[in-house]
Length: 239
Image (cartoon, rainbow, N blue to C red):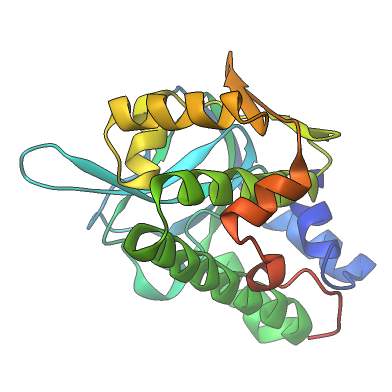
């Protein structure tokens, strides 16, 4: 079950047999979380971190009136809350958007890794920095990209991230989000999301139907989005 996490790490760096053994041994529990249920709650003490093994999860913050902003999507293989190792609680919720399978890794085990496996520690430090880079790109989308551009950009980003763990089928991939959840990612109304999806379909760029994205013209979609995957730091190299 941990293979997608290892695939994601190995896409950018070497992971030794010793490090792989430590990663596998770090998992204390594997459990399932139903769709629309919390994985971690804001401001609740945490003594474990979570690896998403299967499904889609999100970081989200709510306003008092119930309006929600999704600040990042998590795909299989991601640590959803590695930063809780040092923070000890989150300032946001982590929620399951679909049924998810997660692995729980105790903070005490992560501490042992930092004390005995410096390279793996740097790999995980890189992962938290990558999360920050994705957050910055999302902030740029929310602040400056048009609805059409930000939707196109998100679909391009997810194609890359999901592809790293072998879950794309050419230019198609599963995306278990509703249009309401997509609106919460993009800072749009669900009506605006529906209109924007129709525009992308009419322009022959992509379809999002039955929770599956099918990109018909990747080059044009990337051009529309101004998508440059450099912020995803895809190059491999020792850390």
